[in-house]
Image: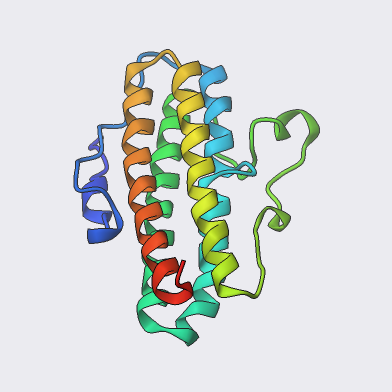
Length: 179
C-alpha cells in the first residue's frame, strides 16, 4: 500500500513550506488515538476550524474576494490536517469518527455550537486568531502526553501551519479593521 502524498494538497502561502512527516506510529495505542480525537473533532479541533472558517468564508467572500480566498484556503489546509490526523488515529488503532475524546463515554458527538458564528467581520477575525492559538496550545499539550516521536513530529508540523494562519489572519485584521 502506497503512502498518501500530503504535499500535493498544500495551499501555497497558506501552509508552512516544510514537508509533512510520513504518517506512522511506533505501535498501536488506543490512548494516543483518543487524545488525537480532540484535535480531530473536539471543541478545539480541525473539524471545528474547518466549519467555522467555511462559515466565515461564505460571509467574507461577499465583502472582499481576497478575504474570501484567505478563509477558503485556510479551511482547505485544515482539511489536510484533519486527513493526516484521521490516518494517524487509524494507525494507532482508533476510528476517526466525528467526536472528541470525551464523547466516547457520553456519546456526545461534534456539535455546530462549537463554532463562533457572529456577524462582525473584525470580531470573527479575532476569534479565528484565538482559535489558532488555542489549537497550538492543545497540540503542544498532546505532544507532551504522547510518547511517540512519529506522532509528535506530525503534531509539530501541523503547528507550523497554524502559526502561518495566525500571521495571515493578523494581516487581514490589520487591513480590514485597522488593529
